[in-house]
Image (cartoon, rainbow, N blue to C red; front, side, top):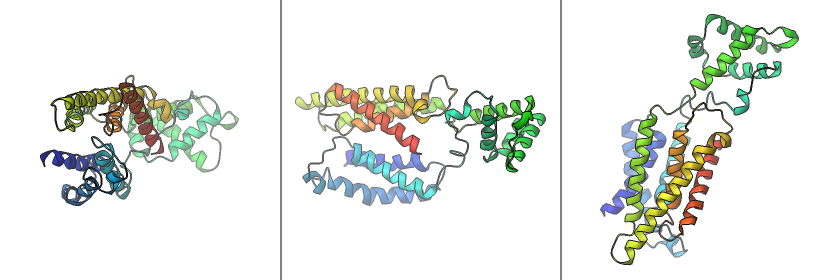
Length: 292
């Protein structure tokens, strides 16, 4: 009973990450109670309880779909109801938006982008009087349908203003507030995942000890592979500009994607297959981020 309780509590806590700081605690408590009492037990009865999905040949050793899939889809529904987090997508920039500033068409497009954001007030506090006046002059011309840099009318001050806007947008992009805590949480989860997947054997006697060892080894391999792929490729895959030397947040999220991916089959796949599964999980994670 305690073991199944840990699975159900995991489902509920997955959703908490999707709605953190955006709903009142009493609302989340009500949701967690309903999920623990009805949603999770039904899903588990269909699968691990030898229900209709089990009879169709469905297997999930440690909960990739039964636990993490259930929690993930529930979190998706919750975020759909709540809408996007304030400030998360307002100032997102593509890599092409940060190309070297030079041609007048590029300056105009950058000014148009800045004119359409919701960060004007904060930007006013961050820029000098000259830079802000130049930016206002450019955006006003755009609003009137004019090219602010046409016929040599643009000045060096205009160029400085645009570059300042770009620099400010990079610095104020929506980022995790405490990377050390993110890393600490990732390692705590990873350690727990080893016991989570290895403990799903429910025994360490005889041949079951080999299964537990394989499950834990595959868990390490899959998480590591996914983390490395996301650390190296996420900016290129997302077509975004980042000034971070080490993309620690991407690596941590990639690790979790790899851990989720391998949980269903960690007990019976070869080590090379765990690497492939982890890599595929990282690609799925990055694809999902791009769609968002």
